[in-house]
Length: 590
Image (cartoon, rainbow, N blue to C red):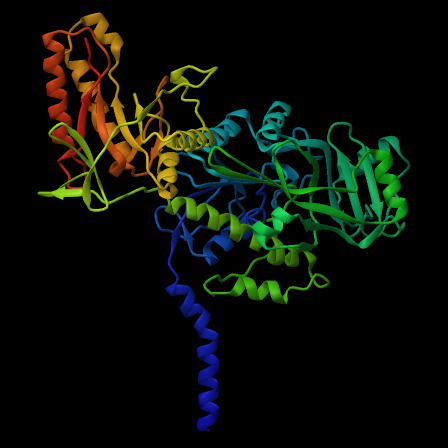
């Protein structure tokens, strides 16, 4: 009896241990924007596989909450109980987002709604919502460019009903070219009892004989021409292994995968442009007659499945298939190691869809999410600074010598600096058009030329501060910063009076804003001609001087107002113990 009790107790502990381990794991804060316009029912199958994985891996939102499939996404929102729906629109500003995941933009049609009984053909008036607008795409693209936010996109995000001009820009941004072909595997090609959309059969019968296919196979559709190609297992054109992924050397290095179970949902056929990495390719299980049919239609027998680019400090991925689409995930996620256990136990012969999710999609996204979380944890660049009477400061003027605090001691500092404006060739300063990868490249080049300081005239986009922090986090010799505080010169020219209340108030606000920015504690609203965004990168320990104001004609009043501004900045930076007391320099000259 005692042995039986101990045995049962051991089994209970063994089963409970993964749950206990899960609760002891640290939460990881990653802000993710999920976009899914194809949610006709409350199954949320186009993105719930992602929210389950986020929760299983203990990723939480900025508010510390778990991600919920029914609320934490932008797109179509059905209410089956009330037989109604709303839409959750993508905001115009995604500042502070670490990862954008565009799951599907195909949309919702009236006949897809579970309470709809009237049959209509999709593609015209029956579409309730669908496609990605240019405004939505620009919001996504600008966030990637401004803050180096990672981006994952899946099929269908640029096929119909997304407008052609939007699709073209997406293709260019992702570094790929869509052939116009999309396809899917169907268990049963018989039109009388299958999931095949009626419009596919109608298009086929416009130019061909009557739809006569039976058994399993693939249907390929050309979005431009309407052409339909069918690969039938029964006709001996395609083998039972269907379509699967083979990972390239780069893909294996990144995801630790070599191949995948068969993939049986929608996919599209694209080519990679120069500079885009292919991490995995699709491979058909083709027979000779199937190869001939593809060749005649101009369809490749192997084509990229996973694309990747690194630019703007961001990682961009395109999955050329509905990878996250899954009809069922476990109701629980608080079980450490469950995903790996399911991957080990999943059998393709029993359920290829689930096998692909557990064996391929999950490990891929685990790597991508870990990379995004690593970037988030590296946003602060802090080094040791001197402290005196509750004030911290990284630099000082000692007699005739400028010094910085390094390795616990004051060290003489010979300034070898580079000015960095807000414009790059072909743009105006007010466009704030410098990208994250350009900042990264410039900081590296500045370090290699043995410079040790940078001077900026005014506020830069968040990418500047993130790239600056990233460079100093790994550089043998850090770069220091002299930060300017700009004053709007037009009112000064008009009034010739620096004491005008509107001028002084606005300038004081600018001072406070820049101080908050260098401490990674600011949200700057969009204003034409100025940088803006969410600033959460603390670089204050490398800011060793302020460049106050702009070059003006010298007179005694300018000198007086400069003194008042410096006093105001000193007062603001010393209000809180975490603010830094640093060197002061003026760019007000004769």
